[in-house]
Image 1 (cartoon, rainbow, N blue to C red):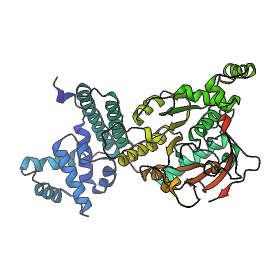
Image 2: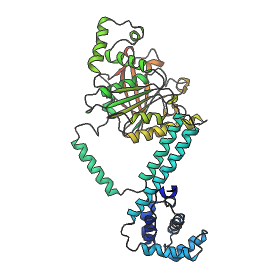
Image 3: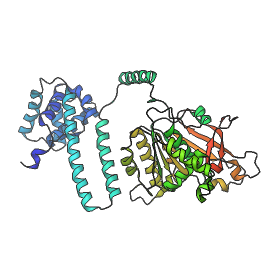
Image 4: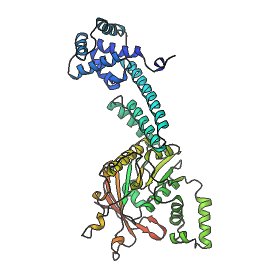
Length: 449
């Protein structure tokens, strides 16, 4: 059996679609939502459907004589046999009931052929290119494009969407497992102001070096992974492109067991502190699924491949953006950062979890002549697309860092500069530098921006 016979296609379904439109020109509307000319396997059928679309777009009725003229304008269907073929299409479709049934078959066969082409290209790429990350990135991107084409073949009616929303609201009302709840950060002042993180959000956590971005992200990651509110317990994956997994573990011990971070570096812990660490390891971590990956220059495609294997994934942390690679040859770093943030937003949507992305701010804060060192959106480094792609932008700022005489000792201002789901604002919280921990202040009051 030769290869042509193995290619997925259905000439009968293609004929049924085209013949149905010839009998009822109004059906072009339904068909065009599901099909493109290239979805047809037969070259004749591609030409016929393209001519039908052209007539429809020009406001003309799709009928035999006009269609034949349009086809001949385009340089085809010159012979009498081809004219007869158009008549037979209409005759063969006289009993067709639902054109969408056959259009779906045509579209699915086209997707299968595209998968075959994709597998050939991937095979060649694997043989020619030994760079595994770039091969995996291409494979995932191409397959997502094919899947996306299939998902976007139809439009969605408002009544159907409202019905789905009613079903979701009913599930939400009866939900006892936290399936639809916002994901709480475990810092009550912030949770009270923001409500938590929404699934599928890309959250940008930005600040200058020394503000505590990594510690803040670690605090939140541990709080979520260990929260008693999550049933089943949520898994949190922390991608660290700067610090090693051992360094991160030391910080969590320091912030959770409350052992001075300097002692964790020197090993000068007391017997009591040693017992506390052992108890923390033995008793408190059994149900905490906080996972670390310290691969340098990791790509979004590599992250996705790892995340899809994680059960009950609840959140992804990435520290930090400027150390990431797109896996592509992009000379312009601004464009590459834009590619990365767009891919991360898509990843958050696909996995339906919040993705918290740490990012550096530019030195422009220190270079300001006035005393105002509060971060602004314009301080984001490398690309304006960072602000555009993020659903929430959070800045960390510690007044004491710039002014040693300030009365705001050990205070960190959490500035919610952008919030698609609520109001922006500023929430002061306590910064425990010795234990690299953040906590709610007893008199913490949020302020509007």
